[in-house]
Length: 143
Image (tube, rainbow, N blue to C red; front, side, top):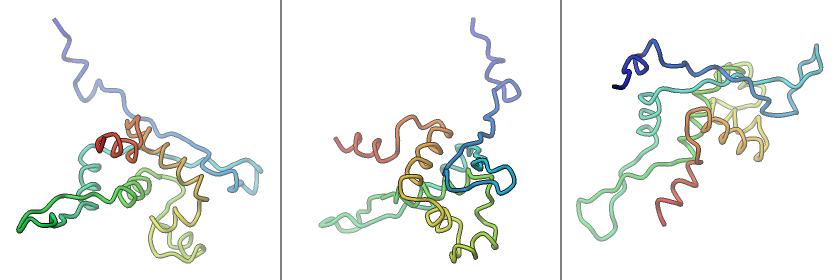
């Protein structure tokens, strides 16, 4: 027989907070070392909430009163990255003011170069158990 105790919440291995050097451009002034960002994972409930937040019902062309859910995956991934970023605090007003932005998603995009941002989103997805990127999954589903 199988051992169901392995599935009990207290026996599940907890997802550890990862330290990741997101960009070589952020250097600790004291140690002169690249600053690591601290990254956690979200629960499935939190992920579902983020997806719903970025899903709209759009009318189906030519079909009266028919709607199709459409998710803005770029916005969803930005929100997921913000939610998973534990350090630096992307909601810190001083940090946001220094980049002249008003929210955490904009701050993240302003802080990182496009390649750094893309790599960070991949890291975030992997941290949350997504082995395939969202864009790749969408493209695969379309084919």
